Image 1 (tube, one colour):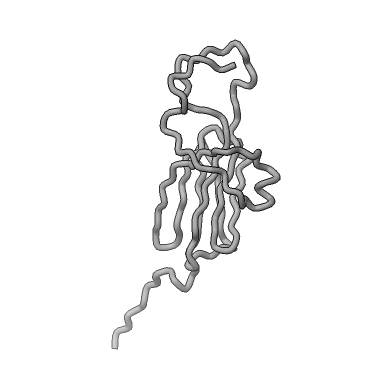
Image 2 (cartoon, one colour):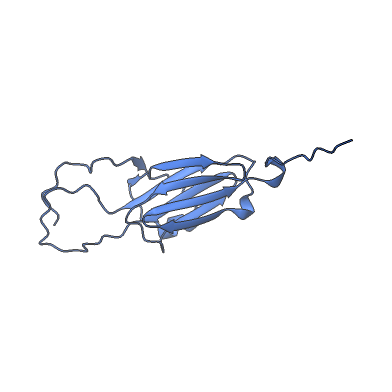
Length: 145
């Protein structure tokens, strides 16, 4: 049993209610929980793409599920309980609680949904959302007359 937590809820967690309408594929892999953590994100735009950078420490790359469906991007992941079921662990303070991450975003029509990619490294998930070619800025050549 984990005892000695310094507060009732872990500090700094963004808790969200688990949606009732998770996609079927996600429901199969996601344990039903009343609350999940919404990962903190940065969203960056450049000429060619948007990037969603999500802090998801403790996530298992095998359980990260990124889906795009009908204009909605969904991120789901389970975290790894690195201490397992050790009964004799006595925490002075516990701020990271294993559980699940969930976040979804409405995505505009300017994204090339067939070219979305994602990578996970050192607790950070980066989702690349390339812009459709017709909306990317292009250089116009100026000819001399």
